[in-house]
Image (cartoon, rainbow, N blue to C red):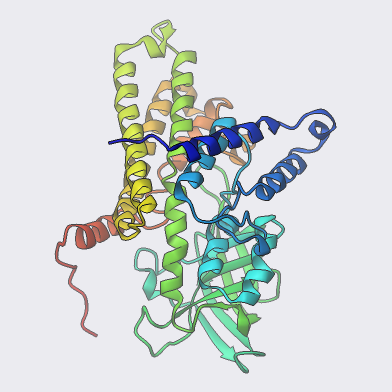
Length: 406
């Protein structure tokens, strides 16, 4: 296996590294607020074609030709430099590429540029109280009043586990628009403004103390008829594209590597039997096992990268699902050891200051929050049991589960 890059890509890596010398910002620009610094640097990175590379320039992206190796180099180098690259928020990371693939020209021009600039904040409306793993059974309805060009969708029902809904301006989600169709074919993908009568958002307080998740209630809420992405009844297919991007976020190997480096640093700081924990043979064994998982995840992502570079996109689908499944398990192992290293400090409840980010390296309660949070991604982006079924059926040719005939 030869994982070396050719001269063109190594030259490109050098250009990226040279650009990244501009982060952190210096002189007068360093006096700007953190948000202003990120916006300024990211705008320069977009102009250079490093950020949102595959989004055309007319929609506010980098406007570069597809090149999976250059994409990978950018992610590696930006992560190594700790520089703000493409945002991991739901709008830029999940909705924008979905609109590029399935949206109308008007939707792309209206929504993609301000979404990339984070001027419009988004949340995802998928799960319902009775429709989680079996998402296609959702019942939240949307009925079209008027024509397809000048009418409105009238929405009634409920969504749950809606991340960051209380901070969002718009929701992208799935709604039943064809009640007489079979469950997968009766769903449409709609964009819904949240600041309107008929929508109530109730935060759900988690055991970490945070309120990232929400219930969203719709009572005759409305959105324009042209806020449908794709065709009526095509929502299930459109949502698969969004889920693909969500799973890629969850399985991000750079993020896992960063957390592992933080774990090693934690093992150097905390004491066990009066000595740094990293000197304990049992701890070293656990760290070695976890790094094997981290490196396996990195190697699997490189395999996926190689297939994509060769244009073998279909070969990427199964590894993508397996990476998501494997990475969530590995992250739990990592955070469990961190929690155990805390000792009695692990009994401290997360502080409010730790709940806004993931509090990397910001004290024991930040690690407690991360350990609790690490249990969640096994459900997000497709629950583990559903992922195992898909891998078994599509990857290994196992017989499908029995399904009702009507």
